[in-house]
Amino acid sequence: ILVLGLGGSFQVGFHITGLSSPSPYIQRFINNSWYDRYGEPPHPQTVTMIWSLIVSMFAVGGLFGAISVKFISDLLGRKKAMICNSFIAVLAAGFMLTSKNVNSFEMIIVARFLFGYSAGLGMNTHLIYLGEISPRKIRGIVTLTLATFLSLGKVSGQTFGLSEILGREDTWDILLSVAALFSFVQIVMLPFFPETPRYLLIEKGDDKACKKALQSLWGQGDYQQEMDEMLTEQAAIEAAPPVSLLQLLRDRTVRWQVITISIIYCCNQLSGISTISTFTYDIFLEAGIPKKKIRYITLGLGSVIIFSLPQFQGLLIDLTGRRPLLFGGYGVMSACWIFVTVTLNLKDSSYWVPYITVSLMVVFIMFFCGGPGGATPTLNSELFIQSNRMASLVLTGLQGWFMFSVMGLVFPFLIDALSSYLFVLFASACMLGSLYTFFLLPETKGKTLLEISEEFKAITVCGKSFAEETRTETRL
Image (cartoon, rainbow, N blue to C red; front, side, top):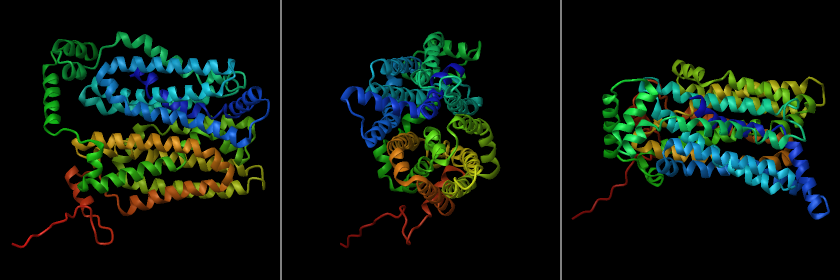
């Protein structure tokens, strides 16, 4: 779990927050590199565009990595896929460390794309590996560690970004490359680990290797029953093969489920949570926080994420149900952004007003992690049957990385153009999520998939439902 986490979701969290602290140094490097190359300073819009590309290339790479996960993990196996993925991260670090010496901001863009590809591929393979090596009775707890390492990665990126560690102008390239050290640990350690038993039995048809892997992972035993269960599960999957993404989008019987999952994932990305992680420095600078204090406040925000680990989110879901967490969380998040807009406009009225802005962001993060952030990841399993579930995961994965890349590309321009009123857009997205989940999302707590499906079929808008079929009568 530890080794997989360091090379898997930890990388995603680190690169999301690691870019915030050195952002002014990278923009200065872009300006100096351009001047040395062309003999004149670049237009501010040019610097903003290059900076936006550096930010968004991570998500673009992540999108391609997520698309290729099934092909690569089936071709190489789960273990070799993770090892190759770590080599990509090390290669990306090489580009990043070389960029400053050769005075090339283009190499930073390439490095960010490679880091993103490694993160997108690694996070998904990490989840597959965890699910296939863990005993069924603790599989849920084991797979939750993916979110734990994601949070640890975010806090590590903020910690290494402190000026006392690597958050300085002469070390920003090392800061953005340090996550590759954890990938190198995975390269060294993973060859000594077994391949996943399920892959060996189902994909390779090797009973002996499967049993040996199970004994290596779970201790000595026969494990014939567990192997028979894997074969039975595979037979059930083959009897009802997974649908493709296009088939899922065309299926009218799950149209409301597709719309619901798409709106919720869009609202999560447009809520502003990704910009808080990546553009914390720019946001707090706009809020009027002194430059020397920004990195420490950022680290404090990261600590809030640690205290909102998925184990506590699971307890909240069991206690209240998923629907109240969604519409209540979105509602509070929307109110937070409206008050942030007000405090940003009043930041010069008193020295303590910027710290009210920080407090509002702490509340925002708490309600996101305890609300939509915690309630969303397992929503696919409650809205879709097994044959539709893989296509729904592909849909949400593509949507998440795409929206992340768009936000990374346009946010620097939006904050320049709209200033404090930018956060009204985030408030609107959160309000849309709150209203949709309050009026249209059925509660899933304690209900079967059939009962949930029937509630979706009963949804009507203007007297019409997607479940209605068009019938044609022919009179003879």
